Amino acid sequence: MRGVTHDPVKTLDELRNHLALHDKPIAFLFGAGTSSSVRVDDVALIPTVKGMTATCKNAAQALGNKFAHAWDSIASHCREGNIEDILSRLYAMIDAMSDSDELSGLNREDVKKLDCATRKAIARIVTPDISLIPESFPHRQFAKWISRSSHRRPVEVFTVNYDVLLEHGMELERVPLHDGFVGSHRPFFFPESLRDPEAQPGAMWSRLWKMHGSVAWRRITCGHRSVIVRGGTVGDGEMIYPSFQKYDESRQQPYVAFRDRLIWFLNQQDAVLVICGFSFSDEHINDLMFTALKNRPRTHIYALQFAEEPTDSHLFRQARRHRNLIVIGPQTGVLSGRHAPWHSSAVPAILSNVIESSSGSDASTEVEVRIGDFAVFCRFIESITERD
Image 1 (cartoon, rainbow, N blue to C red):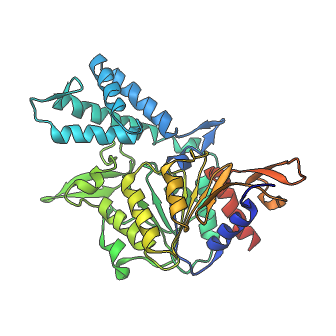
Image 2 (cartoon, rainbow, N blue to C red):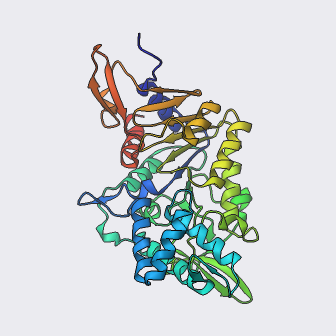
Image 3 (cartoon, rainbow, N blue to C red):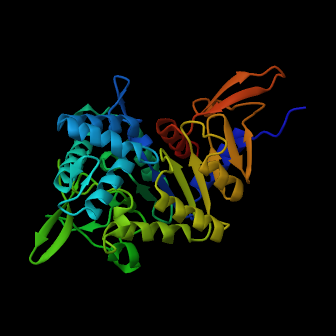
């Protein structure tokens, strides 16, 4: 007798219905996997976190042997060993060291030099030549869905990516976009536009909250104040921040404002957050989401996974604990707290690009769900407006 399974067709249809409702609070959280979905000659225009980490390691090695050895030492003490963890470690070292201290073979000025080289490498990686981007790319398809939908509430997008692919896609599709900055010469961050409804643009304006900073931000001195402004892309990576620094520096804006905005969104009645390309390695964001799931049982989070998670992963443990966290992986899913493989008796033609199927021995269909691929996800939501 076959064990417990989940029907991917039913699950994706429920997701589609959530996204098609006009009065439901809808938001998205996008991670590095969404940027790497843009491909030119079958090569990712912006590499994955793994590729980005390798490039930053090369930048450290270019500084000399002691920096190369220090990089390996620092990476070995990081939980994930990826670039976000390493940036966080570098910041912690700078904050803890005096000028006479030495850690991992580097003095404080050396660590600052390594930190600066790392940020510049990241900024270079995530600032590709816009002319290389194909005419049709996932972020533009996502923007097209927004432009064709008729939501009565603004669609909100939270992202931990530093690049401007989302902004580019929105502009191509002429989607009005508010990112917390106001002005025309040097737009400045205006936190009231996240908190005060009277200071916000209307519902037809989508929202974009860049929770880890952006290559298009920089800090300037205006009079006697230090302010953050948005302009053309900046190559020094100044506003690329490690995960915990965003919440430690005297409640520094705009990062705390974006965190509070995510909390506010998740606390709305019947809110739906769809996550794609996100590794769940940012513990601050994880805590916000899992706390909301516990306190708001009618809030739902869909975690669309590009690769299959280990059965004992933190994400699966949380999904088994919270029935309102739905995990959709390639081979298995967690629905209503139950982890099981996908199985379907039939896959409709409209989902043939989302669900790869093969005939099973009992005349039913074995499937692999590919919606965790951002390119596939964007084709899926684009089809929503085509069907409605």
